[in-house]
Image 1: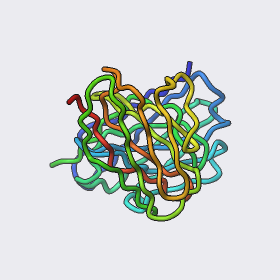
Image 2 (image 1 turned 60 degrees about the vertical axis):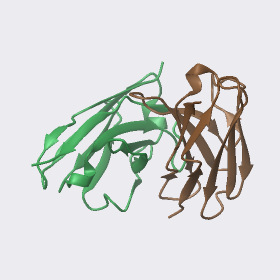
Image 3 (image 1 turned 30 degrees about the vertical axis):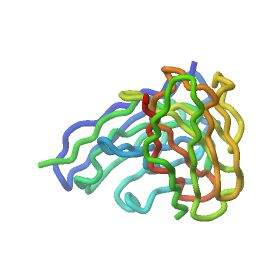
Image 4 (image 1 turned 90 degrees about the horizontal axis):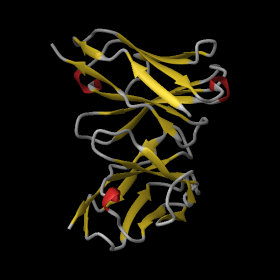
Length: 118
Length: 107
């Protein structure tokens, strides 16, 4: 059974940093691209970033480019999102999602909440 | 970026009735279109990919159609568990983009 479990969310001040993690199990992690998708409170879904299975290629939404860094450790079956220079508009539930590059997402975690506020 | 527009924003339907949801892309996405269902407090669930292929375990009452810029999700006979928000997503070009969602509520 595929499982994706996010962690690392919390309350952070504007300008601060946070690192999210997503522990994956139930599939060959290194064979699949992974993404982060976020959802602001009461709003729709926004794709944030993606990384290929090998980690060799990464992709970002313009809204986070230069501030967020996606990475993965295939030996630990774990996906990461390093978030720097956080803004109030980054407040959201962050989901990790499994899917090939430029594809749909067939499995989602339950999300971790990031709140950016002073 | 490709803008995805869903209509209507809210659809009021009685149980057992048919629901038709629309999704329009600002430029052609070929058949690279997926649909998701999201219930309150839950993560999205993949329903349809490739515009018309049901994901594993999705009931046959859910069907998708369309290509290019116009897409439709049809729920043939609404069950109580189908009342939720539905999102379309294009996976033809970076950045991946979602529609704003259609809420299907009980009439």
